[in-house]
Image (tube, rainbow, N blue to C red; front, side, top):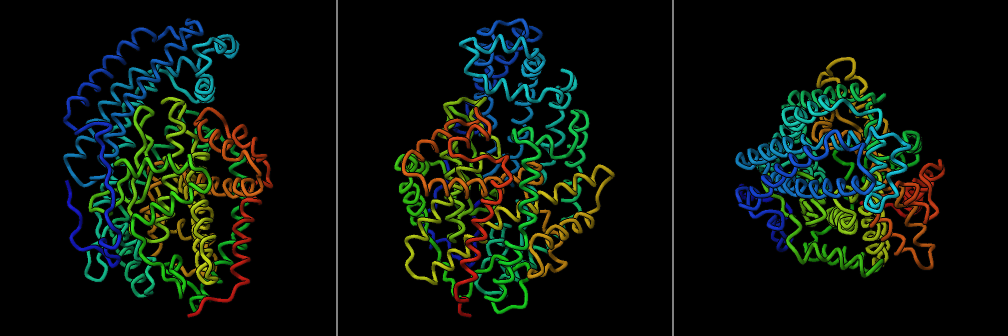
Length: 605
């Protein structure tokens, strides 16, 4: 396996304390272990038996017989999900290791072959008439799966024939999955030379928050130079995946590039459009105003793009050791609910977190739910800044949510992306409010508030700009391949609109679209972040005003997993995302924070 890089960047790793690394043995003890081979063989046989027993017969089953079939299908999804999760997590930790890459690809191909035997099942459920299904659903063994039946049947009109579904399914391993793997391995292999140090993308991006402006500029130049060198390959990947999606959308009768994502999120397109309109119309009141104010604080006529996340002049954002980050987050969770903190502590007491920056490790951060019969794992690239503490709070929120939803089973524990960000952003909010309330120094409070505003702008404004970039790219790709230069032009257009005149976007910034993994892994995912942030702002306001009972309602919402839609989940809190005022209230929280900062004395240069 790859070793850690020899020369860490300026924030010394020793200052962070001992960082945890995950142990995947709860899934499998190794790529060649007997348990994994046995599970693959068992899964293959079970899929064949399931196919022989039910293919062509689903419509003739009684309600309880269908319930038994769904329960068996659920168990198979758990077994196959365990195998796939292990391969994904092992690969995320060692993206550049050829033997791990081979194992990852071989596993994907084997699981794809097995699941091909199961494709018929959901298709036949979709094709059952509404009247017939209404008669089946009250059966005791099927009633438990009513939410999954509802969600599966919502794709009616977008399914294909059995043969075509199998072709699309089988081609994934040589189609979209291979291009995604190429992106991941390319990004993991890139190195950025900053002041004589060879850095990963995570380390170079981390230097963009350095207090020394010349360090930020050098890191930005190194990133831009490497992105420029690789833009043709990364542009080809982007074009190919956009075309692949356009082909599938056309066959499935989706009328717009983002339509399949909206359906998968069980969110009405008009709700997303209302979010988009609310955020873009608020750009001048939010990002434009804040960045102009920040430029004044820094004594600049305007910010360069490498100044956007710069610390304020008197910000002594010290390195926070891992133990302090852990205690900070858990204490904030405990103030809200001891039960929430207890769930969060399980991740620290067990080897479920991989925190160090390592050569060959996937960039960014994520919480992987794996399967209900196991437990989630968290991947971080912890470097000790306050933002890293917030990332820990965010991913731990995901992890706790996944633990609470696990009893719903493999088919119903996953939450739509729009609601999946609720627990993570709420965890961030709890941690921030706790830190802010414990800080008595006015200047430090101002700095913390500014940091929170920047995080919220990154979550709301930046992600909506990302969404606009994707909309334009996918729309234009329908007319032919986009050159890397055209991708750069679209990127600069949406960034200029969202960031405003106070941020100067040097031409070198034009290639920075190429490192965003969400564009590759999950097209149109990004609006879920803005959805979640605005939702949590409204939810937190309800929490502050609630006398009692909020925590239990909150836990009920998380336990529901994917069994309820957003209207049902938010109704107990008196919230409705389809109400146009909902988004205005969420954005008003950010605006109020900016008002407070604007009224405070400017930081000392």
